[in-house]
Length: 428
Image (cartoon, rainbow, N blue to C red; front, side, top):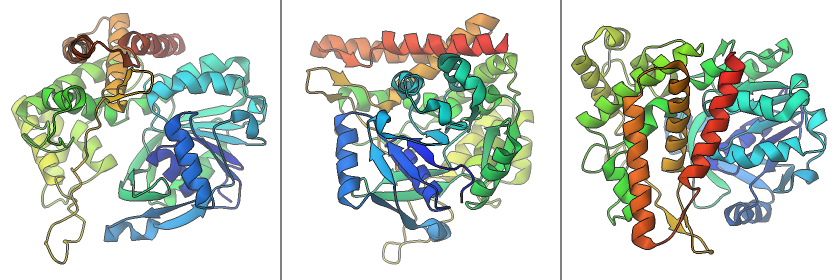
């Protein structure tokens, strides 16, 4: 038994499917899978059902082989009314998807049977907003935030094949009211050799989401935005240095400035500041100590600004390939950990264009932080500069093609307002 009882996982991405597979592999409780009612969601449901409701986790890396395996889900649907008698709900979705998911949960007849709700890689303010939106029934549910997914996973040749690229070393979780849930989650994550740090408040956990500090300076970069909006033919990879990707001295300066502004804001709401390099290395994907020493990591906050830039560049230089992978027998090449492609804006059937998850997620985060900054009167120069860059590209794209992008910037701003207001209300 996995200790969570019958569990409904909401999310059809690689992260959601892999988390559902992870739970199913650990016990005989029922695991259901909800996917959004979209064309992509329907296609995935069809593929998985045609494969006997089974997905398989694979990896090319020797140090992750023990996590390979397959599992069969008990139920798959995009219709919430079909899911009955679930004690746990796990949300593994992008931040903007919460706009649609929260009303679904509020109107779900089975919600009163849910004992715990787990928000995986919870976006900033999500826990507070879910509690506020669900109303009095939320008082009867342990609603927890997890700082990240348990692993970096991508789809293989189909929706039924999941490729594990790496796994987390440490995850932060908001402490539940029920001690038995603490024990269950500790046992679950121990099976993947992941340490847990329990924090008292959800905002503290959400502030440990690595995407806050890494994605905005890398995604909202002219090289990446040119790829997303202008469909430049040559590929761009998110974690590679120029010209293959956005990484450069300028990008790392932006990262440090963003970290300083963000942690200053979040500190006002009860999330303590931390050593950025230790967080990136120790909690997420680490480098061998021969490459990045313990002294370098621990002394990071005391270094000069230029010294911190050099250490960040060294870290990402060390992750261009997976340092723990085995070289290919023929080519001698190591697993290209940094080869993360950038999706582009694409046309929908109704003539509108869909913005991909990036930069939507990053723009939502920036808007949420800017609203929180305004509430506590802190500096937000870098946040504003990055947000304005997204706005410039979006306006130019829509004017040049005479189309509209979805979601619109106004829709994203509206949801950011909901997240920020819920966070402020929870802090009062």
